[in-house]
Amino acid sequence: MVSPVYASNLDKDAEVVSLEGEKIELLVVEPATVFATKKGGRRLGVYPIDTKLQLLGMTDKGYKVKGQATHSLVTGWVSPSKLAAKDPKFIENLKKHYEREMQIRELIANSEVAIGMTAAEVAQAIGEPTKKESKQTKDGMTGTWEYSKGRERKMYTNTVDPSTGQVYRKFSHIVYEETEKLTIEFEDDVVSSIASMENAGVPNVKVIVPPVIFGYY
Image 1 (tube, rainbow, N blue to C red):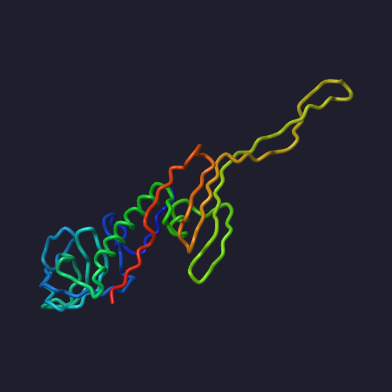
Image 2 (cartoon, rainbow, N blue to C red):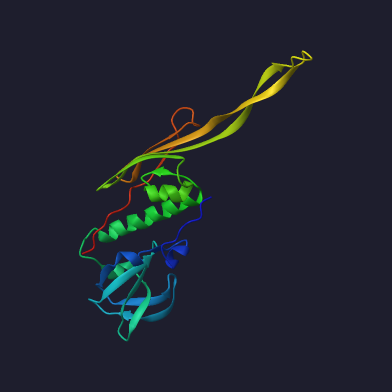
């Protein structure tokens, strides 16, 4: 299993997706109570209406934010229902982003790949390919990755000893036999097809949504 690479300490929490590097700003539309943990707990203050908050992370039920509360600068957890963005679809797309990240974590933990993953996510899930054919364009990476597994077999020939006439086996060479092969094709840095030599018939290929692109300004 490939160990996960965390972008933030927030990602070490199995329920939290970090957004610290995204510089996402949200606006308070109703007075929002700030809590110390994602499950509530101690109240840290209240963000007034029209306060601009930086989004640091999220679960399926709450956002971790930083901003000026009524008494001081506070970092904590608030309800998404109290916040808004200029893009009316932003909150919806943010939810899709969260759901996808949860799927990606599960795939990586199980060393699995799926259509819709990025090249970086595939490498994190199953490592670097044994063979790579790729082309980098302005839109991303396009190409094919191959993963192969196999075994070595020692080959022998029958040889006659000229002095005794006895037949014996003599080592000849080693043959590599490919037992498994996984071929992954990418379009614009996203997995577009998966083929496995192991599968008889149609492979059981998982599909997830590609990376979610969302605007918030």
